[in-house]
Amino acid sequence: MSMAGNLRKVTSLGGVGGLRKVARLARRRPRVDLSHPARSPLGSSVVNCVSYRDGVRTPVRGDLVEVVERVRKHREGFVWLGLHEPTDQEFAGIAELFDLHPLAVEDAVEAHQRPKLERYGETLFAVFKTVCYVEHEELTATSEVVNTGEIMVFVGHDFVITVRHGRHGSLGPLREELESDPQQLAKGPSAVLHAIADHVVDDYLTVTDSVQLDIDQVETDVFAQDGARADPGRIYQLKRELLELKRAVVPLSRPLEDLATRPIRAVDPEIQAYFRDVSDHLLRAKEQIAAFDELLNSILQAHLAQVTVAQNEDMRKITAWAAIIAVPTMVCGVYGMNFDHMPELHWRYGYGMVIGVISVACLSLYRMFRRTGWL
Image (tube, rainbow, N blue to C red; front, side, top):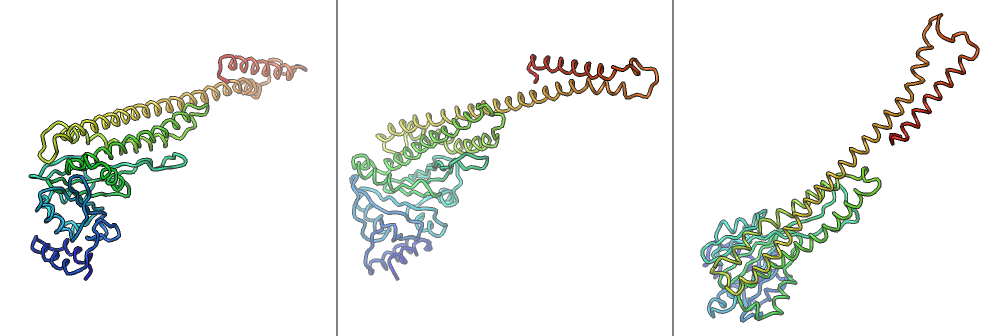
């Protein structure tokens, strides 16, 4: 059985004894680099597994259990394990190894959680909503503008476990950026937690800037000369997408406030100042979203007002033409009655006179409606 096959059995064994059994089997096989994404030790869900000591990445030798035991033996450094949409079976052995709370494990596997921060003993569990802007050539009533995912983070004294859901929000570039700053990474797992929070909030600001371009385009179309003909479905679609962005951003305020102000054992006190900076960026994103929501409401109301004005103009035109047409209709209706004694009935020029009166009356009404702006 291959090394990957041995470590894949970790997820199906119920206790640490089973984990150690897998570790013993693994010692008889050639070692592989756990950090290699093509050689996921626990199946396709494991994206990366590395260990750090004094902020420097150390070579990974052995299986996951050996790496963790080595870190705990020296009481220095930590392990960073990254997963993508793991199943219950894939996560069971990891949860046993790191003594993760069952409720947090359930949230990490099932996803669809609100941003939050929870403490389970010595372990900190944080949930972040990731967002990305969906590129589109033209905004329609069905265009997807914002796509969301999730990142769950388990933070302990000597480990960080990130569980990502969704097709975006990769932490690979973030890992490389952290590794280029060993002094910051040497502050421990809380430095990774801060970097993830900062990365997620920066994405919020990037998405809000892109959404603003769509709102500007809709605003331009609505206030164009034919704004009444603009599609209101685009405005509603933007409001729905903005609501999805709001659900990701707004609930994160309380967790970041706790990380920045409340003493938490798993968070280095030096890192709390950095969380305050992230909280400030989040506040900016919240203010932008609130402003966008108010602006879309104003655009929608302006569009509805334009439609109402256009309908009133149409009704005035219809009323004016109906008044003009009523004159010949009335005169012709009177002379269409079968009476012998009617004025000018047998006069030679009576027909011409009636046509002239009708024409003058209709022309006078037309000029009057033109002056008043009804036609």
